[in-house]
Length: 279
Image 1 (tube, one colour):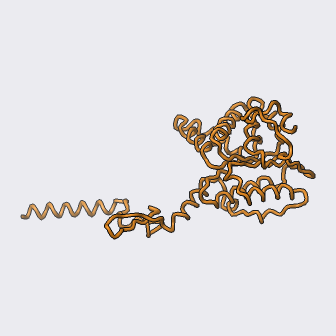
Image 2 (cartoon, one colour):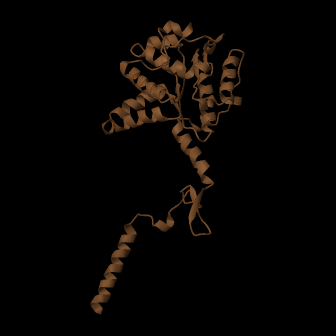
Image 3 (cartoon, one colour):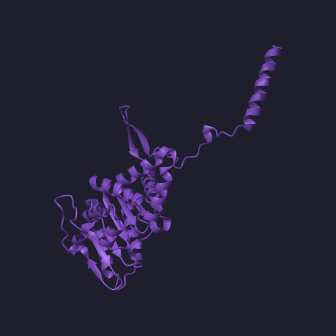
């Protein structure tokens, strides 16, 4: 019996030593963000016949919004922007009206994008962020707001990590997102590698019929010239995806490109030449 008691005592000592150094949190102290559903986002309900059904927990909508925000690329300040925050001047009134019409009619739900191109410093980026914020409030639509210089840097880094797996995942995510807004298209140096990334993403979204929008400080024909390798293919697809809501803005004048007929090549939306963008 004495030996048995000694064994028990040694076991107790080892247990105490283990507990003193063990940093694993016991399951009883797990903290849930939602104590009602324990972060499952659904609540089981027992029926009278003993079977079970489930209903959505009240936390689900909040968590969906948080996930959409995290994936959007917007900062908290940008996500909080509303159209009323933009104060149009005489020079920016027409652009403002076009954006307001886009938001009021929720044209992204019809697969229609928008394009704001032209002068620097007239509020194109802010209006694009406002549209992204409005889309995100829909709670059912994933939107990604992409400053293009940051995008290319991230893709370069991803290309050399984990054997390129992360790079492919990022490309796939950009193609499959419900809505993507490219901000400052053409600002980065248009190397062949950069053009290839643009073409792969934009062509993928075009074929998948995904809503795609962009802003740029360059007019469309200038963008086509900058993208010398893939310019015709990239710009023609962008026009096909945004043609109902394209605004070309200068410091003193706006031209609604949608009012100018754009000739398409058969059903794919290809242009015969960059001159066709304005004919």
